[in-house]
Length: 445
Figure 1 (spheres, rainbow, N blue to C red):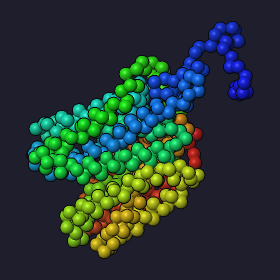
Figure 2 (figure 1 turned 90 degrees about the vertical axis):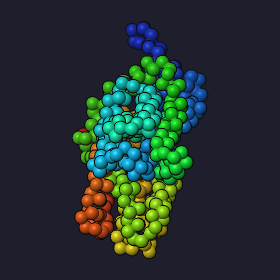
Figure 3 (figure 1 turned 30 degrees about the vertical axis):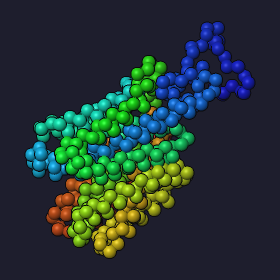
Figure 4 (figure 1 turned 120 degrees about the vertical axis):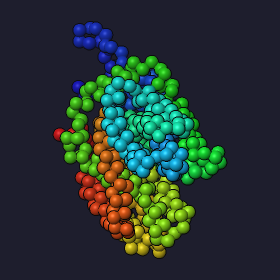
């Protein structure tokens, strides 16, 4: 039915004379999360007043959550030797700890769409951040290796849920600012990653124990709960009806695993994350083998993440302005290719240049997060695509550090590992070409 012309009264009764049911969409009221009865995000409240304050609270909550999305991972990486000695980890168990994030993000992220159909996003984020807080606290005080693994899994479960929810929240609350808001929360994620990696060891030394270097981040996770508590504690009936109504209507037709677009997104996400994990795990060792002192090799690795902060902010905004992402995808591929070749043949002479190029090439991560929102028409489509791309992608990503390590040990050099990363980059680029042009997961069959 066409919309009523301006000035035309909206009917309040049915053809039979019965009054129409009052809904948030009809009255101008909003549910606690600003979602109308169709599941869309309403822009006004009663009387047409913008919900600017609510939007700022949601944005602040998203940025606080994003700060936590890698701190639990990189702080452990910085203190892994101390944890291994303190808890008497075997070599196999230490290796399992390093792959646990990717396993958790893949398995638990896949369950998030099911959770979204039953709980509001605010309540899910509260539960997720509480799980992250509890997991980080408990693993910092336990003396058992098994309990450490279990509580780490609990913390990672909270991160896995938030990984999937943030692109959906961008779509719901900021549909016309997808690139800008994605850039903001990706930048916050990068800052949290860098700060946790850089400060975990100094904090541990200051307090005389690795436990402090891990446990301190539970406080940051607890703070991230606060912006979501008001919406989570209100009556949630309208919110759940809106979210579940939209999901019921749309979800059966949105199955990314049965579409070319869904698989292309998953492969791009996975190949990019594979290279990202490999760089975080092995770049410092590569520079040490090239003759750099350990502290200088660490600074070069930190340079990749530090330079990634402005790139994380700018890349999504740029992607949001482009109709076709192909030029951007090829530019990222070119930067990564030059960096890999430089690392293989001249790691010492051009180290700073290779770090700069690597940082730009890793801009593929904020790009794919933005593209998840750009390739879905609805919040429901976004959460389905986000869950599939990330859960499948992290399975692929888990292979990166493992295979690079095997190739390095078996060949005694970096030519074969870099060749593997170049092959993964070629796969990533091929998938990128498929997701470059505008299309929507809801239209795929």
